[in-house]
Length: 114
Image (cartoon, rainbow, N blue to C red; front, side, top):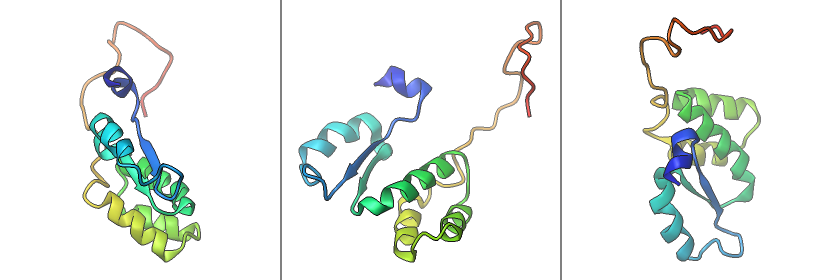
């Protein structure tokens, strides 16, 4: 798992109304592996907005921008409130700021930095 997490953000989404959604064995196994990326979702209709919010938070979007975008997309107020609570304190802090070159200047890649 550690090797996978070095390259990707790994999540486990547990719809709590699924057949095993209330099983204590699932969070017991997954929470130590993925930490805060273990997502319990009560209502299946909230899965897509929650994933969108997690991606936005991971990319450094603010809570306000995320909730505004969800509202603009027509997501209901109950879901927006749930999503806002789930990303509270994490949104806006996802990007690392670094200096320097990604590729040594002696090597050309044909890729331009934005």
